[in-house]
Amino acid sequence: MALHAPVLVLKDSLKRESGTKVHHANIQAAKAVADIIRTTLGPRSMLKMMLDAAGGIVVTNDGNCILRELDLAHPAAKSMIELSCTQDEEVGDGTTSVIVLAGEMLHVAQAFIDKNYHPTVICRAYTKALEDAIVVLDKIAIPVDVDDRVAMLGLVKSSIGTKFTGQFGDLIADLAIDATTTAGVDLGQGILDVDIKKYIKVEKVPGSQLEDSKVLKGVMINKDVVAPGKMRRKIVNPRIILLDCPLEYKKGENQTNAELMKEEDWQVMLQMEGEYIENLCAQILKLKPDLVITEKGLSDLAVHYLGKAGVSAIRRLRKTDNNRIAKACGAVIVNRPEELQESDVGTGAGLFEVKKIGDEFFAFIVDCKDPKACTVLLRGASKDVLNEVERNLQDAMSVARNILKNPKLLPGGGATELTVSATLKQKSSSVEGVEKWPYEAAALAFEAIPRTLSQNCGLNVIRTMTQLQGKHANGENAWIGIDGSSGDIVDMKERKIWDSYSVKAQTFKTAIEAACMLLRIDDIVSGIKKKQAPGASLAPKQPQIEQEGDADNEQMIPE
Image 1 (cartoon, rainbow, N blue to C red):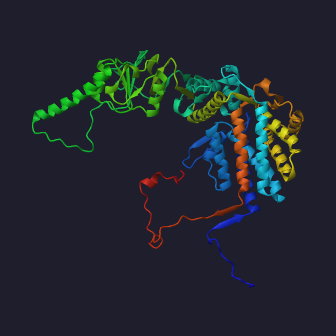
Image 2 (tube, rainbow, N blue to C red; image 1 turned 90 degrees about the vertical axis):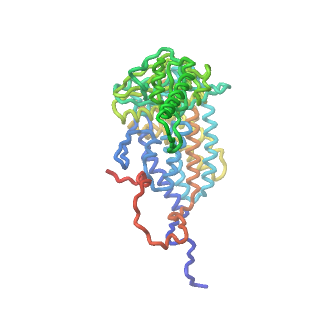
Image 3 (cartoon, rainbow, N blue to C red; image 1 turned 180 degrees about the vertical axis):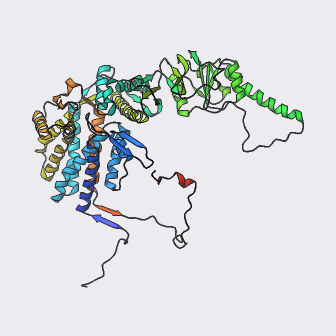
């Protein structure tokens, strides 16, 4: 039984790494991702510029945005990217902090893996630390009054102070708060729900300055009336009807043939079409609207009838836009003109007008009484600037939404993390057994955020950190942190540097859970091929001819 041929379990083409090697690789990968993003944390943050394959440019410092653009090979790094996406979808802010924190958590775990700690032990300690951290958050959070405009402004500002538009101060914060309070829907019990995607439309129009951006009390659409010469372009207190059906003669399904024997029959057919459309228009005009908007087509004849009655019409509107208009002016979208009732007419708008901005026409439906949807009009010098502003606005609106949903505040500027860290350090002495050390390490890992902040300000990191730790030593002075723009150690209450509770809690949870997940991986098997259909491999490979469908595939040739 001495010498046997080695037993092959895995195919040759498969690569398998296991044990500590994998842990190290994963930790390295996670740290690499964290390092890419680290410099974009805080008000003094750097921007990243990315070129995609087609030669387009993205300039941003939104953590999530950067990671989405990156194309990574390492599986662990990919899961880090998922993190910031989750964070972005859940709470909309803190995408950078999540990655930095998770990277740090893994970094401190490395020492224990070298000492042959079992990953589950480390994970258990981390989960315990997470629970305690959330308790600390609950303890230091202070409630905020949602109607207090100044407090809200401060909050949103501290979230976007780290972004490119931070220099425009209140502007973006104002826009965000206006938009979210407008579109907020009261669910009862004091809970507000804001659907940013559906009811807040951001229209980017290049030209003019950023200062001209505003939140419209209503909706704006990139359309002109159908017959500009005939129809009114400005209507005060319009009665609006929204339709979801074509105002044209119904065409037969795929190539209908009608045989006409006599010349007169042709006239009869045309007349029928005309009467049908006249009927449709008559049903609409019964309600004396001033503006008819449809998602489908409008035939010339219908335009004529509507124009004759002095009604303006807009056609082929996007469904989402139509929903917004309905929300804003209180109309109901109707599917068949026969069913129109007085209650379906929107009378909430104060003004309909078509303006020319740049070289395009935009229809404004504004001054609504109680709009539940709105449009944010962004102006800016260039496309890149606008895109970045839009991303920042998304973040700002998410923050505003989070506060509306859960009106609790925590200190910004790394103060929260330091408090958590100090409290956990104290508690670690009461943790029993082996778990004590990883627990303490997790406590230290929280300091990554203030440390990175001070790094980005160009401070003396060690000195700053020791000062801060001294201030926070026994879990007191919970509100002392770093003012990211000047680098001073100050009380966050005075400088109005806040973070919203839901963002912080989500950041901690996501980061620690992800760290645990990556630590639990102890085997990577790569090179698993898709199974081929039997017999497919035998046929000679035909030269591939690119079909039309493939032309849109990702592998574009860079210019």
